[in-house]
Length: 66
Image (cartoon, rainbow, N blue to C red; front, side, top):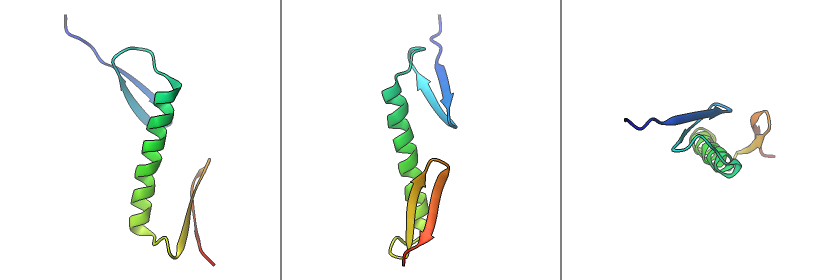
């Protein structure tokens, strides 16, 4: 019998699981990794000396520093 994989999706994040159960800790860790990748991409486009990058519940907020 061929082993099957289980996939779980939440907030546009795709999880591959060995078991059908998923822990809240695994979801949080993956969300943080995803946010870190988004932040790295934004830093390439916006200089942090000039712009302030903030993560809000709606998404990223980018404003000029004063």
